[in-house]
Image (cartoon, rainbow, N blue to C red; front, side, top):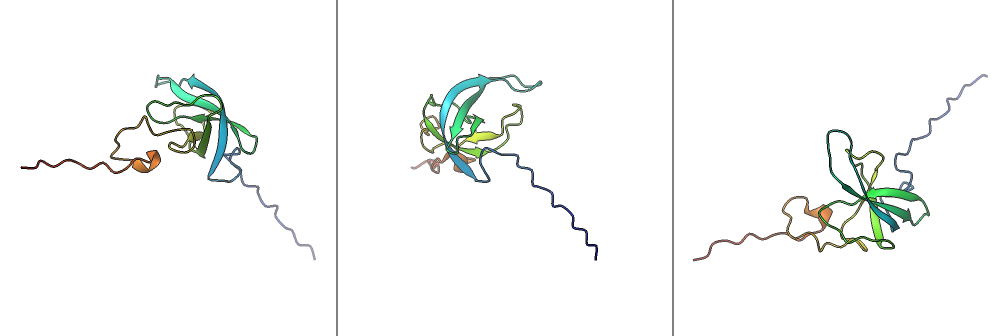
Length: 125
């Protein structure tokens, strides 16, 4: 009997640094600025990270203001930054060294920033 078996295709991993994990801990090796693609113009805050599995990646620092520097520990997740080429990771706010002191009050998207619910003041007579 001649049975032919198809070779299974290997799955392509977009985020090789995370090793199929949702998040990885790492240590910052360099904090620098990068520029986005053509129609946009800004200075995006980026950081080089050496992960716990000794792989090196470049991640985006979200939000307004940060206090990250060399040797500060961060937690990073997979997320593409659309206008910055080659950036496939983001730093998670509120975990390890990336503090929440910069964020004051957020109403929407609080789970990504870890802020508490903002209570509106009602006019009392």
